[in-house]
Length: 406
Image 1 (cartoon, rainbow, N blue to C red):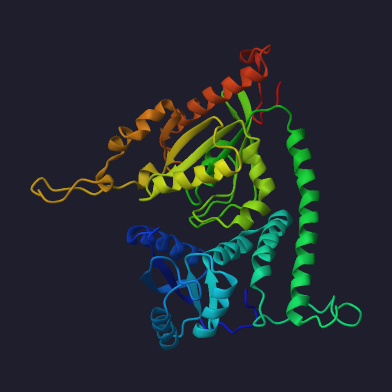
Image 2 (cartoon, helix red, strand yellow):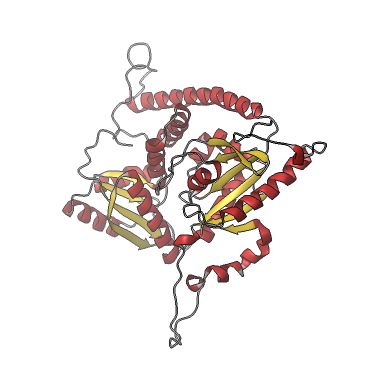
């Protein structure tokens, strides 16, 4: 957020705490993800720093000795950025900045920066800008130069108002303006959703970078932007799809992530409304990722927050072509078999077996098991369709290639 500070390099160090709530293995997982976020934002990770503490230091997040180690490394290696895996308080941010004397980011700030890069439409840019302003407001300090002089000057300041108070007022006014703009856009989008009629709505949801946009392209035969980076999709994309003789609307939504900033959940309310109003959720999971079970939990947590967890859903395990598992030699009597050694068939016989037909294993990019996927989606959409139109015999409906009734 410090625009005026000179950043000497795009190289970055990552910093995390191993605490009573987050063990060493979990911390490594989060740092792996933070490194991917850093790469997506255009940075290069050169070193990771971790420290075991009962809880993060309220003043400097990590201990003074460890922070001095970080400072020494940054100075010796010409590092421009230090990224912390948790959200820093305004006081922590100020204290750390004084010691390290480089650009300081936390996980929330980094995610917001990626969203700002990825936002293509006016709507997405407005949502991201609102989230950034809400994040920035409590963190304004004198280290930031004055944001704007448009509202400063004669007659615009209160008695004894300081520059920082003027900055805060400008940001609060900006937040108010952006919220009003979003209300107007929200109304427009609500009208658009209403104009879609009673057609069945299916939404692709899931963790970021699990292949939702690739699956969207395969099913709808469209060309939605897809890339092997986090948050490739920010803007909601809706396509009319016809499977066999039933049309429905398929929506590609923004991906979720662990520790998703609350500012983004709030500002992306309308985007998430597409999930809230969906009749069927296709929860896409990257089964080739070693922590895919945690990803499922994170997505379900956010679905619960937006009151969409109990909707009809299908668990779609994608990227089976990329799935690998560890093996144990027959002579090895020491190594204990863990989930890392599970084959796909082993996984199917775990808790996934309880899902029954509501779980599918596919590869969108290699188009494996896509016929099974289409049949399952067709069956679920047909159920909803027949409930919605009980007096229409869908078997006699005929549609053209665009899904328009003939």
